[in-house]
Amino acid sequence: MESSKPSFSRRDFIKKNSLAAAGAVLASVVSKPVFAAGLSQVQTPAILGGKAAWSTSKWPEWPIWNPATDEKQVLEVLRSGIWSRAEVVTQFEKEWASTLGVKRSLAVVNGTNALVITLNQFDIKAGDEVLVPPYTFIATVSSVLSNGAIPVFVDVDPETFQMDPAKIEAKITPRTKAIMPVHILGLPADMDKIMAIAKKHNLLVIEDACQAHLAEINKQKVGTIGDAGCFSFQNSKNLPIGEGGAIVSNNEKFMDRCYSYHNFGYAYGTAVGAVSSGCIIQGTKLRFTEYQAAIGLAQLKRLDSQTTTRNENAAYLKSQIKDIPGIIPYKLYDNVTRAAFHLFPFRYQKNAFSGLSREAFIKALTAEGVPCSSGYATLNTQPYLKDTFESKNYKKMYPTDMLNINTYNEHNKCPNNDLLCNEEAVWFTQNMLLGSKTDMQDIASAIEKVHKNSAQIKKLGKR
Image 1: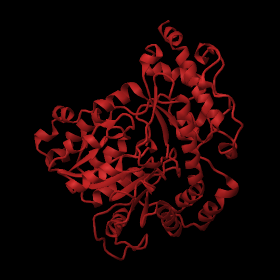
Image 2 (image 1 turned 45 degrees about the vertical axis):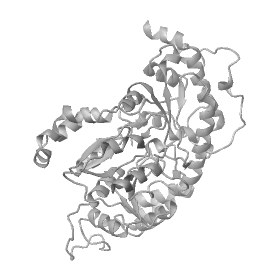
Image 3 (image 1 turned 180 degrees about the vertical axis):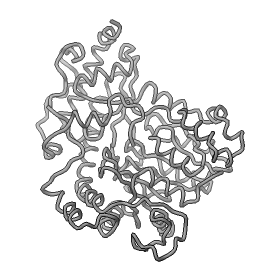
Image 4 (image 1 turned 90 degrees about the vertical axis):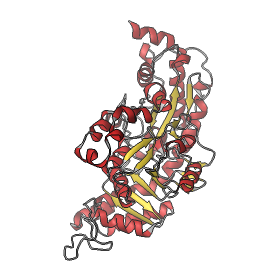
């Protein structure tokens, strides 16, 4: 999922911060003194003419590609001339399912359509409501709207950035058919509580795990806990293929229907390109390709070790910045046994930084060589909802009072999310967590430099 309002775009970040040697990503380095433990003297921040805190020439590149080890199967596929869905896609699906510990996986064109297909084949359509968090990428909500259903927003727990289970039951109505928790930023939602609520109210649980590859709750991979899980393999993701996605589930009949839907409605097991048999359901074409699968198989080989590195660096970075006034790092639920850290989030409180705005803080931190973003805009208040509700289809499917955008907005207020989006949230991207401990120390040093000089930086902005 991509940021709705990045202060520093992912595309620009990747272009400007590439590392030539992939081996340097996981290389160990000798630690130097931790700046965040207390600077011996106040250092001039880069935005005021001082030396940047970050000492390395470039951040780890993304995506990582090693021609010597990664290209053999990709080249074999390209030279074979068999590029549409065949044996390599099936191989990737089996390996992804095995990695997650789930019976079935279906590779599709992207994570957005993984969600669209999943909702569709659970028969979530016109007249239904789906509970979603407001702190997520637009694809979560657009998948609900694409099927003609109504998204109902459940506010977040600001400490974890996740859907707050304590606020779910108040949003359940007779129309509610599913809960769609999003393991946003690669940090798992509180699935124990969410599953208990779903069981109590006989609701489906569809996990949006598009940012949460290999994250775990109670040592079970996210995406395999609910009725189905959806993943994205877009280029920024922890398992990058350029574009791509997957649905996973232990429900064999459901997975058969998903396969059929993504292949024009032909029955599961029908060969790609076959036209002699009839279509059994209404479907469309959302198939994965052989060369995408070959890229995915190469990337999958290093995903586990990269996830371990991200977790180690995230924990270390958190320990270095947690005592800086005005910096509140992410919190994991007690049942989380592993996170994915697609992003490293923290909350910024400007009162501890001499009233320095978040925008000015991000600008100062970026000047230190530490790119960051303010993340998502308030998804529950954007014009796309009004546009959808005014469409011909929605006017025919729902009574007028349900489509009144003012009433809808009133019922879908999310004040905690507003605070995160408008004032507090700051992100680092996942490839930064593939650096060294020294890099993490430099990030902490940069934040402390900005903190100690925040009054002067604020004056600069007033000139």
